[in-house]
Length: 194
Image (cartoon, rainbow, N blue to C red; front, side, top):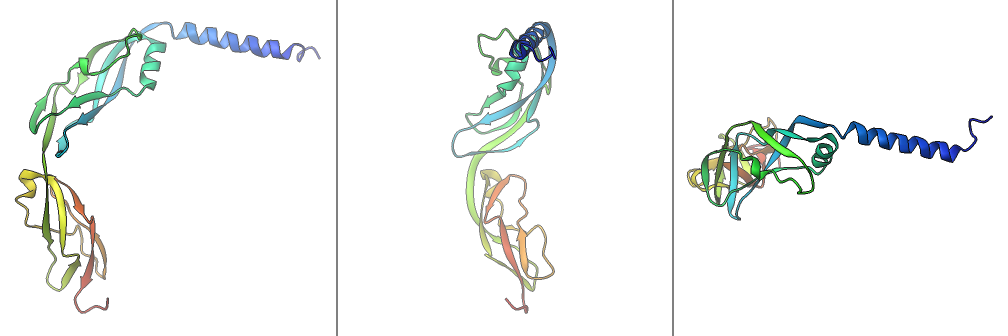
């Protein structure tokens, strides 16, 4: 059989042909719509409480292969927060970094046109865990972390649910509270054995 004659040369020819085809098919200039994640950086001691969008829908133009390479590098839209903010920002296409050797152009940010951000100084405080009569929580005091304006007004925190028998329950975090330490408490019904 002559089909296997010069097999390495045939395989090499096939690889070269596939490479030429890929190069030619991706050398076309295209306009594509892509999603780019939003990344926030803020100073120590601040906490991000609310943001309306974690992704941008962006229209980009360039050679198909360069766009593919750009997207494989996991591009992000970076927002640097330097102080507390509770306001809208308008995304700017200049915050999407493109390596200089790629010939890609960000045509426009399609959506959202504005992003609402709530970032505030972080505060930590100990509060009591509220339970109904006949039930107690262990520990009965926990630490909460979150926005200073919210945490300073909280005097107690509730479990998300009370189990019918002794067990564990996660704590329900009000808006503006990002963490409780510990995240759950043991619920003990008075009169039960423990």
